[in-house]
Image (cartoon, rainbow, N blue to C red; front, side, top):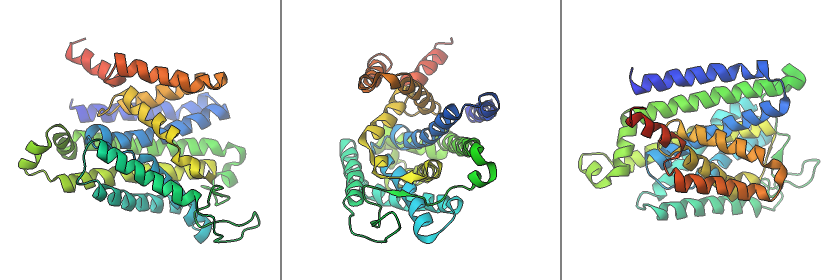
Length: 325
């Protein structure tokens, strides 16, 4: 069996198991946390395509996530577009934004890409929080164009509250699961396909890859644009799930948390980011009651993996496979 077929079967099997969870566990908090896991799983699998597979040190992923969230909220709030329609439109807007960022990074490499993409994310954040001029005057008070520090709320939902009442969160769970499965399938298709080979070639030996006719300009734009669609869709679903969008989606702490998921799970692998997301979310949840020690604990988890398992959880599995274990 080819690796691609094996990965697809594993993905389908996991999807079936996860689809049964709400039937076994009815606790709203657990279902909501797993829905959040699906959102972060989408982000890290797509970020992994840029960072781990293509080797581009982009830190713009949370900015793209925020673009998807804000675009959904603004389309629904200002134009009364149903959220279910605004979500794919926001994903396309995110792709356009990512292509601009990708074009700006074409002549840079390594830490310079990280600095530029982080600077772009911070510029977007500052534009949002410093937007104080009244654009509209709802009953709640003056609202700037980009929501300012308050952000957006009451822009609509996916419609499941009206259909299912208090059980709407179960429908959101299945929407999140469906999007996560599509994102993982997309990641498998990219990594196991010709595009993945081109991205890896540019990552491992750019000079040789370009001498063989692999265009850095074209493929770097490809990976930025392709990964941005599901990242923007994750941001859009985040807006629909929580019903509020604010500057917190630009948080550096959240960016580092998601980056840690990729490092702990294993960069450049298909299942590593998902394993890292599951482990760190469990660790974060387990340390929720210890207050300020929570961040220290997460930092220690990351340090242990960086020192003892630099290739992450997926790297352990790969080493065992090569050893014939």
